[in-house]
Image (cartoon, rainbow, N blue to C red; front, side, top):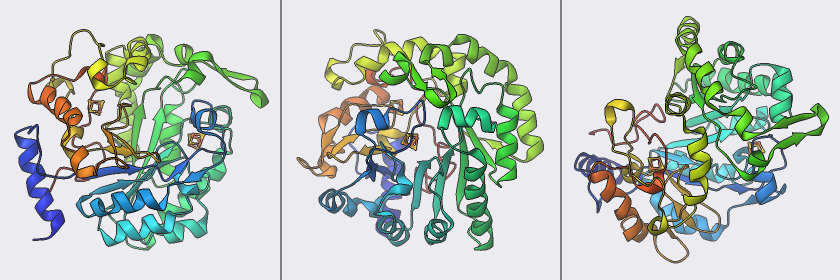
Length: 383
Ligand code: SF4
Ligand code: SF4
């Protein structure tokens, strides 16, 4: 039996018992391929916090984590930078091809040139394009770029993917629903349809210092503030439209996949998540918010597979975070092996809470990572 199939079996066992100490390895890993970004998307903190120069992951880090690629279903290559700028893109194409897993990324598609598309199609792709507006004017205000050029890039990819007979490739559009965009969702669905993308997801806005203060785009004389863009009113407008959005998506043959906007709007998390933002940076042991731990409620959309499947985020400094919502470090691969970190006291504390039917405090108001997070298998074929 192959290593990945063995891991599938073990993961299924660990998951079904919600084991605190596991025998399996993560099946979803994100690596920070690049850090820093020359672009200027208004809601993004990366250029402010990590600089405008894109820095590549070191060979030393790749050597430490690549032995674990054999267990993966998904290798993600985005964290604090635009992954398509990575100078190691051919390394990741070859690594995912050799280990028969998806190459995953969230990308704006700005840099998706035909020559790059042709190279990417050598492996199995799972790309979520950040298309955070429905019209060119709003797209320019938010993303600072030309929407039509990005649509042309993505159309080339979807057409070539179909022609090359790669039915497993997954291309999604991701849309952050805010005041500026909540009434452009029909346009957004049409963009997806026209570019041959049949899966979309709706995401909430995450707070960061830049937008809590207010980000400004001079060329458009446009200010973007967290509490104006994401609040109860915006959430309610979204929820009111949702039945019609679902109908329209169905007419266009588009599936609305797992996203966190509906949960966030229904639970009014905009203020709560801003308050929790500071405490989630603390080590797990020091987390005190929320004061009362939430109960896991699978029927209400509240469960999480990340402590078993992983959605581990390995940053260029070697720190390993559990998922894209949790910012504390489980350990550092320059100090311990990933195998040790994956059963160390921090991750066991998190699994222990879930095992007992509770969300760990450090998860704050996250809805959790469901099995259909990626629309592809991440919990082993026997789960
Ligand atoms: S969203 Fe992506 S492309 Fe835009 S500034 Fe942030 S890292 Fe760069
Ligand atoms: S509930 Fe959210 S923050 Fe907690 S482990 Fe799952 S995905 Fe991460």
